Length: 94
Image 1 (cartoon, rainbow, N blue to C red):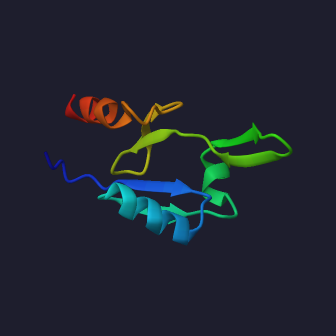
Image 2: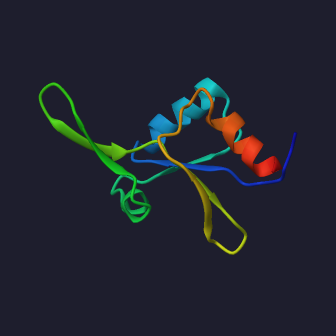
């Protein structure tokens, strides 16, 4: 089903990482790189993860539905990669 809605993913990962990820999973949407985390911070989705020997700041998995006027209409917090696409489609279909 084509709803003619643009989909954009943003993360702090490198362009090369995005290319590999998109190819591996045959993604039909755009992935943007935000290594300085400007968009990530602006949307308030920066999260700190405690790894074994250091703390790493990354983007939390959040999905935003932004309407044609540029207003955030719906936020899916802590988006689950197993169910997020179906959740978003259900919401968009009404």
